[in-house]
Image 1 (cartoon, rainbow, N blue to C red):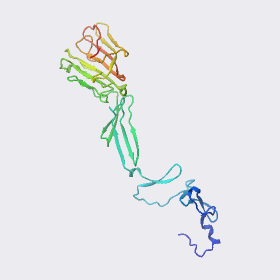
Image 2 (image 1 turned 30 degrees about the horizontal axis):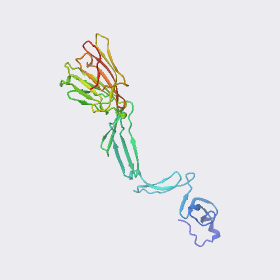
Image 3 (image 1 turned 120 degrees about the horizontal axis):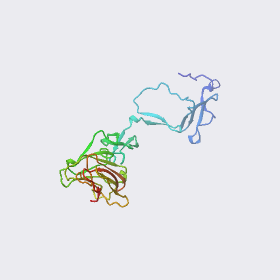
Image 4 (image 1 turned 90 degrees about the vertical axis):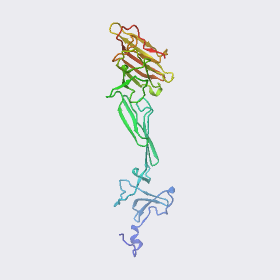
Length: 311
């Protein structure tokens, strides 16, 4: 408890009184703050105006003691200019989370993202895949989960059974992976078609690697088709057809002149291939353009290579 001034003469007690350092009246902050000093002229760290208060905390000299613990959800924060204000704790503010799926959720297409909003401030985190890395969104829009996985290959073989037409998708389940073709499963004498996705600019680099798992002993065939939905997609590249007793035959289609949109595999033909281990790699090279390399074999005597066609 402080000492009472009652009965003290001014000349004996003025040194303990607080006043403005220049002995002038307080003014508005726009006219300047007045440093507060004692009667002996010793300045304090406190400055006052009629509409503001300043504390000079140089040297960590601003100390608050004996604070109590409460359930308050606000805190004092200091701006870069030294202004003290209050703000809600982040834990006391409502958090809104929403997840946006990528167009196909992989490293060659639109990337998935999560949006966060806390107390009116918001931001977006985008998950981007890279070479051999896929990022996919699961869960719900308001409670999303994100999975980062290897995007090049999988420990599980994906076998395409061609008992019906198939459309492969630009997602992390099929693209940038090896897809095995079971040609022996074809029952339709007209053959079956594997439809590639549209070759859009966003899919440049997207690759499908097809490998024949089992050949067919029948005349059934598989078409790998680039413009199954009436797009302008074309195919260019090189196909090699090999046999045991003759030199390989090569079919080359140039990018600048191609009108090809289909790859044909028929195990029983001598000019198309379709034996176990035969490989066809299809890569989106540009918008509306697929680059294809095919390494094929035939059990007969190869007479030519007729793998690329227009249907």
